[in-house]
Structure formats: structure tokens, C-alpha cells
Length: 440
Ligand SMILES: Cc1cc2nc3c(=O)[nH]c(=O)nc-3n(C[C@H](O)[C@H](O)[C@H](O)COP(=O)(O)OP(=O)(O)OC[C@H]3O[C@@H](n4cnc5c(N)ncnc54)[C@H](O)[C@@H]3O)c2cc1C
Ligand SMILES: NC(=O)c1ccc[n+]([C@@H]2O[C@H](COP(=O)([O-])OP(=O)(O)OC[C@H]3O[C@@H](n4cnc5c(N)ncnc54)[C@H](O)[C@@H]3O)[C@@H](O)[C@H]2O)c1
Image 1 (cartoon, rainbow, N blue to C red):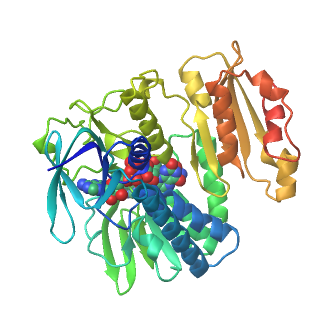
Image 2 (image 1 turned 60 degrees about the vertical axis):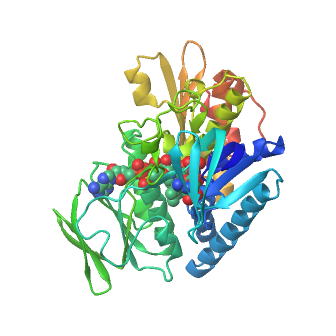
């Protein structure tokens, strides 16, 4: 049995950050990653980074083959860099093996060649991420030319037509990507409108821009079967049959606990199959933590990173910050133009009975938008009319993924909107429009 100070299962954002920090302090750390194409985790290898390289490449007028090559180059570079970052630390051992709990504090690791050994540590960090939620639709897994968010990134040729099952973050981002390449895309989703959690006019505007790129929406539709006709894929719905060169299914991701041997421990699961944690991400076993997607929280890389901060501080005896104190989590869906959100929107302000004011500014009225020759979108904010604090913002525009972080910072630091109204901003930028946006 090998004894460590800390064992990390999974090379995701939180796990690698903690392994690196403990290693830098001279702690003996084992980090176990079962897949040698996944050093750095989902984000770097099959998630955020490759998808955004593809989007950026296509938006800067590269073709399909070039975009795929660029994506492969970036991913290989970052994967190698991530591996080296930990492998170079003397007290950190990186194992390429499958990890399973034998008991609360003992992990059995098995490498591809069948070798196995047992490891133990007082502190164990579970960072096994999430896996694709494959719906039990007849023929979905058996049909050819049907892809998930990972396999579609390795397509050899650009499909002329693409059907997408699921109009969530992944479905919409791939729809935007492929439609900009000239592929005819159709999105199938049971909901009445895309982005159902956003205000209706946001959904309408996003749908309008996507439709201009040729995206078709098959909403309130239910797929009963997926089948092949030669090389084509047929989606069978109550409204008829639809034929495509390729189909992507993207209907959510679920915490990855398969094969972890949770049944050999006292770790509890939530009703939804995530690892149950407290506000410091500690499981029901003391000093065993679950960080990132596996604990059932928001599935973003920056949440996994924030989880690592909470665990790090907690283990250093600082319990000032916890998930209970995590506020104003922003997000961006990388469409064209991108949609970025933080805080509450007007519908939620009304529901909460807040005395609010709202303001909307159209991108077409912004000088920088004319420089960029992109007049699409709007900025909308909600403020508290009494305290002057910012309650939320929805930005549908170029550069919104950067701008939203500025608004989040103002919200976190309780900076009143009047400050942004009178702040000096460089010109011509999209940020300078915050002056007018906060002018009520
Ligand atoms: C297509 C796509 C696009 C995305 N885009 C964005 C985005 O733009 N922005 C954003 O913030 N988020 C995005 N996300 C979400 C983001 O990627 C995830 O929330 C984040 O990567 C989760 O990280 P994690 O720390 O939970 O673990 P992960 O990075 O998922 O790492 C878990 C690791 O554990 C390994 N593992 C699992 N089980 C075992 C075991 N038993 N033994 C050993 N190793 C094991 C896995 O192989 C994996 O490498 C995207 C996701 C996808 C799929
Ligand atoms: N930009 C980003 O930050 C980013 C990008 C991609 C993914 N992600 C993360 O990855 C997670 C997973 O993304 P996702 O798009 O798979 O999940 P999601 O939860 O965002 O969307 C799932 C979609 O599938 C639809 N759906 C459910 N059942 C269906 C059915 N039978 N037929 C057709 N559609 C059906 C839902 O209505 C929903 O629109 C996201 O929740 C997000 O946290 C983030």
C-alpha cells in the first residue's frame, strides 16, 4: 500500500489545481487519471477549449479542415502542458489508471496493462467530472453518423446537414458553429422556446440571429426513433421524419460516479446521483471531498476552480468562504453574438417584488459596434431603485463574455450603478456603453 498526504481522483480543473498547490508545499500527492488523452480534464480536451477554438477559427474565416487542425494543435499543446505542470513537481505522482474506492480511505488503481495497486491518504479529492446523458431513444446508440459532443469534434468531413437533439448550451454552440460553416442545422427540443430560462425576448432575439444563419428550430418535438437510411440519419418525431448527414445529441451531462466504488464507502449520493457534499465540498466521509461536476453543482470550469478554492481554504483552517457565499455566478453561451448573463433578470425582479429600474441599450447605437460592423444585440440591466445596487445584466453582443465579468465585479463589491454611469472608459469600446446603460 502506497501512502500519500493527498489523493486526487481525476485530472479536472479543481483536482489539478489542488494537486499543484499541495505539491508546491512539498505534500506527497497522487493524482490518478484513467484516460491519457484527458490530462487537464474535460475543459481542455473535449469541452470549453476545443469548442471555442473551433468557433474562433470559423469566425475568423478558416475552413472546416483548418479549424479542426487548429483545435487539435491547441488541445495537444495544452494537454502536454497540463501533464508536465504536475509531473514536474517532485512530490506529485501522476498515475494513468482507473481509480476505485476499496474503502473510505483506500483507493485501488488499475492501469490499462492490468497492473493494480492500493493507495491511501487522509485527504481524498474526487474530481471525476460528468458524463454525457444519453437518452433511451430507440436506435440512438446503434445508428451510424450519430455523434455526441466529443465525437463530433473529430468529424472527418463537414456535413451538409446536421440535426441536433437538445437545444441547451452544447446544442446551441454547435448549431452556431456549424451554421456559420454553411451546414444546414436543425435543432430538436421538447421546450416551447430555446433558452427557456431566459426572458422571452432574449430567446426570440437569439433565435432570430441563429435563423439568419440558416438554423431551423423544431421545438416542442419529441424524437421517438433514430435510424439510418444508407449513410443518412433519420429522426422520427410526431411531426414527421427528418433526414440528415449527421446528428448530434446533447441532452445534458450527469455526475460521473460509475466504477468509483462508492458502494464500498460511507459516501452518500444525492437523489439525482451526484456525490453529496456540504458547503465546504466535504462528503459524508471526513476529509473526502467532491469537487467540480461530480458534486451536482453548476457545470462550468470556473465553478470547479472555485470549488478548489473552498477546499484549499478549508483545509488550511479558513472557512470564511463556502458555496453558501458564492454569489453572482456569470455565464456565457458562445453564440454569434454571444449571450452573457449575471444576477437576476426583469422577470425575476418582478417575482421577487424588488423595487427595480431597468434599462436596455441597443448595440446598433454603440460607436464600437459600427467600428466592428456588427450592430446586432442589446445590453439590459436591472438595478435596485432604492440602494442603487446592480441586480443583474443580460448582454447579447460581441465582447459580452469579457464585459459580463466587469459587471459581476461591481455587483460583488456593491459598487452602485452610479459609479459605472460616471466612470471613465476607453473609447471606442463596448465597455464605454456602460455609461449610458446605467443612465436611468
Ligand atoms: C462540449 C462542452 C463545452 C463546454 N464549454 C464550457 C465553457 O465554454 N465554459 C465552461 O465554463 N464550461 C464549459 N463546459 C463544462 C466544463 O467543461 C465542465 O464543467 C468542467 O470541465 C468540469 O470539470 P471537472 O473539474 O468537474 O472535471 P473534468 O475536467 O471533467 O475531469 C474529470 C476527469 O476525471 C477522470 N476520471 C473519471 N473517473 C475516473 C476514475 N474512476 N479514475 C481516474 N480518473 C477518472 C476523467 O477521465 C476526467 O479527465 C463544457 C463542457 C462540454 C462537454
Ligand atoms: N458556454 C458554456 O459555459 C458551456 C458550453 C457548453 C456546455 N456547458 C455546460 O455543459 C452542460 C451540459 O450541456 P448540455 O447542452 O448537454 O445540457 P443542457 O442542460 O444545457 O441542455 C440540455 C437540453 O436538452 C434538451 N432535452 C431534454 N430532453 C430532450 C429530448 N428528449 N429531446 C430533445 N432535447 C431534449 C433540454 O430541453 C435542454 O434544452 C451545461 O449545463 C453547461 O453547464 C457550458
